[in-house]
Image (cartoon, rainbow, N blue to C red; front, side, top):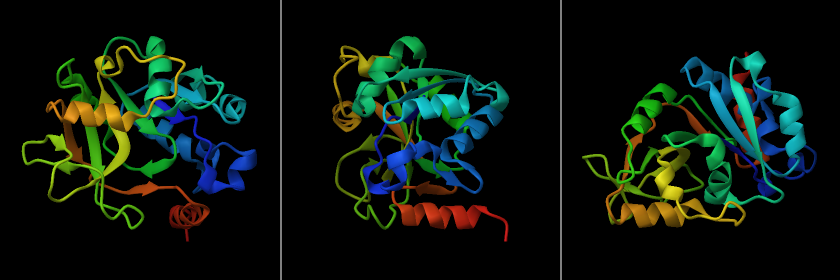
Length: 224
């Protein structure tokens, strides 16, 4: 699942007329970078949620055939937050563990490795997160990572959640498909019971959260 429903307030005025995942860096929309890398890793069945200017996303990407993937859409009248959007999309995602990717980040993550981690999930060990070194805009990080690969909220060195993870549907059991619900409280509750594993994302990762970061990413991706 690619998350594409956010309004992108920090990106205004760019997102007044264009959904954030369709903003262009290096000659192609941010979301297309994800789609192409997912396809290259053999992940071809995709669900994309949308709210703000969502029809533009459908019109741009279509059914995904030109990228070698199959795309289905999960429209939201108004954005349901991350967990709420996933809960709405569960009928499309099915009963097996699945990957979730933030549509507004750029990365060269090992999606095939993340898919293998997803295959190890079950209703007890229900989530696997990719974490990155703390960027300047999040110096205190989000979560810790133990040597044996458990994600926690305890003391010690902390890393930043990349927005890429794998989840078992059981994590979202009982959530309303129509109510906005944040993901972080669900993850913290699962971490408290040692139900969340994780790993470092080794590679490039950019949270494209401001117009300045978008310009910097665009410049770095274009040939000199």
